[in-house]
Image 1 (cartoon, one colour):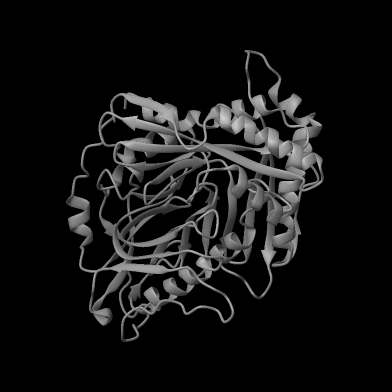
Image 2 (cartoon, helix red, strand yellow; image 1 turned 60 degrees about the horizontal axis):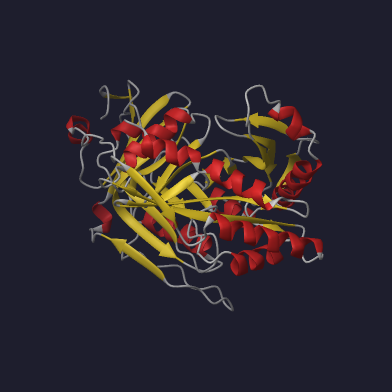
Length: 453
């Protein structure tokens, strides 16, 4: 629910107005010589020239996640109380194939061209915004949604963007449906059990030692069933409270809280947080951070991930800062090796989505070399990852945006919840230890599911 009246509305002409082009949205045409997957647009027919997108500032902040209107269809990208939530579908787009991100980018430009935009704030994330969740592999479906209503907060400024006929006063007066706990939760093996996962890790280490590749990230899944249909807001609220320094996200039922920011692009500035190398406290008093920083296995695993990100960003930046060594990042239940990379884009200034597509899959979620690691994943994981471990975030029509890697997450479908987690495998990885790490990475979702509310 919005708090406070709308203020700061300018009088006179607004520079931010853009005029619509006639006709319906045209899906991006295939690039010559590239075979594309199918794309589907789901949209409510409108009169293009009369559709407006209006952004206004609010005089008092609103709590974002609890403002979400209903138990399903949540769109969210929030960290430490700032970010965006959205609901209602103005336009929706899906695509598969290696150029899915490029097609989403072109689709968003077409959506934007069909709107009259009144955005006096002109901040990153104001005006029309797409929530985007890419697929991990080429056959996995990527999805993008431009919601009818977005609530946002950035640098302490609260605002809303409303597309179409909805009125801000009506939204402010509406009461979100009550958030309810899902009740009892039961668990069962999904496509790849813990035993199957340890076997896959054993096979992967043998292939690494043979020289086929340097690192591969393997994952397994777990099926949860709740007594009542799961309210996505319940999961989001628990995750945001328990992991405020992570990026809490939701797009089309994929809900989670990721500690890893793949890319942030605001104007010419870019940033990325690379995580690889993990440890946890088994006993009180364990010196986890010191042990992790001294682990040659984890340092090597982390180096592959940093190099994979730095090489991509170096090609797009006129300057790039890459720390010489990682630091230990302590979360509620795990400690990771972490490196924060920052830079300044050159004149080509690719969008946040374009950069996310170039970076994916980094060695933190795929492996090294990339092509070899992807092939090993296809062979050793019996399930499709879908949108797990792929970029997820938001993009505005200026090209600004943020994309986390979809980790510590689950796909929600009514009472069924599919959890996934994985870990990096190198030559001296121990299968039992890697299986334990994957189980610990599922704890954030399991704790959130089992919370009393």
